[in-house]
Length: 416
Ligand SMILES: Nc1ncnc2c1ncn2[C@@H]1O[C@H](COP(=O)(O)OP(=O)(O)O)[C@@H](O)[C@H]1O
Ligand SMILES: [Mg+2]
Image (cartoon, rainbow, N blue to C red; front, side, top):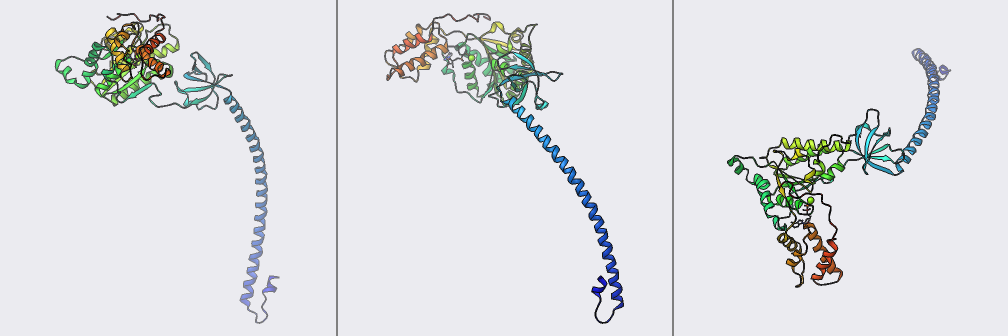
């Protein structure tokens, strides 16, 4: 047929005729080939189509399952959650968690939790009904939130402290001098004290003293509060102690001030629970940091406690806290000074007699006196007065110094 079509009307060209025959043959072969291939591809296509259908069915099935699981997870998470701190993970896949209210629980762990995140000390959310860990709360790395308070240079001077003159002198000698004039110690050939411990009843100005010292030396002041430490850093206490000393060395000259030392430095008991064991690990770390600590370096260690009686004796051994400074209740003269300091910026009426006020506030510590001054000011504000009068102070004293005897936790003269 093709031949007919390509047949020329006039002169017959033999070569051309042979060419066209060959060409037709080629085309027919090619068509057959392609048809075979086409059939092959069609069956392949059908097979794949079938497989795709199957895969789609399966995908829908899995998607449905995922949705179900996700909604289950969501409901588990939306019920109120308890916050706890991971104490340790057990070999059987469960873990010990301390709840924020104190008690410890052994709880399960949701499969959705990445095990790498479960390090002792992390905060976890617990499902309230099943008490299992449902998520890990991201850790905050801010030093202030971690219980360390870094104050580059606090602005409380010695002039803001009433009384406590001998205490200030002791601190100058034991903390300030080694930082400002280390060569004196070198010359004389003695080591400055390693650690200085301020002890005395609450509210007498221990924290205040520490801040004033830091101000005077231009040192970085790193304040760590023992009680916060223990509550916040379960499993981490020892590490935070290490971090604090590390930071102090980096930012030297610096003063590490451990407030409420008793919270991490209480006497050790042999039958300690795991919470106490944790406190002990922290204390052991502190002791070892103190032992490896060069008293002539640019870091000074200062601590304060209201409860020297419960401190672990190991802390008070030579080479540890070897300088004790007793911060006592203010006497008449000190109370007068403290009242003057806190009323300095106040508009006082002529009838206010600070000496008299000091003489009638025998049981007041520095913090009480500050509170009295504040309260007197508020009293005047409430009365819409221009100045604070004697009657305002009288009312404030009555409100502030409630005459119940405070529990005597602290025994005077323990180290006298
Ligand atoms: N000797 C003092 N001179 C002036 N203010 C004082 C004195 N003692 C205590 N205060 C006031 O009471 C507050 C609490 O004192 P603080 O130093 O925290 O006591 P402590 O650490 O001994 O418990 C201080 O911020 C300060 O305002
Ligand atoms: Mg204090």
